[in-house]
Length: 192
Image (tube, rainbow, N blue to C red; front, side, top):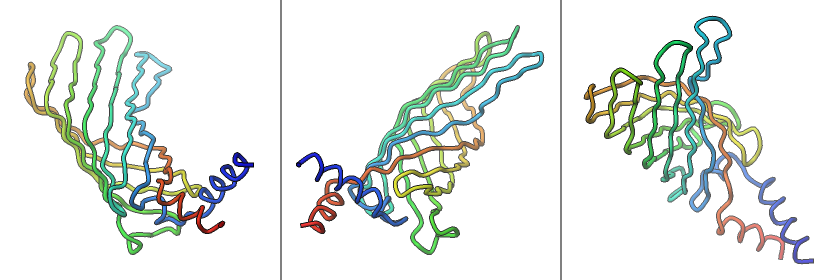
């Protein structure tokens, strides 16, 4: 009986969110972004991908703080291989309801700061402070799942044969917004 009540509670929480409920205090964001995906079929055969898993806790409505990890690889037949990596803190601010241009979407800004590097075999490398900032848009395909697009300026300052590297990156993401305890308790109390 307890399992049935628990499953009912989870189902109601999942169905009962509005666009603002995903981004309220106490909830958790878990997901990641993918960028620079390329699989070359002709010569030179190029493969590249950048993956960035993320986790963040909503410390206030519309404000999430958390962390990220980053891994990127670019390789081509008979050419050098480039590896990028990073780990650090991230912050997100979601625009209020006035920022909705679609019924289930929100604009947001994301900033990150951490340690990272770009190493190219037989060429330039940079390792040090990795900073990025940029706007994004999240569209909620369900009450708890968001698809997003994010354009960010990335800067890497540090040591190595190149002291500074930067780029502008367009990535696509998949995020799951999990309800916090306070949200689950509110729903549970509604069913008592």
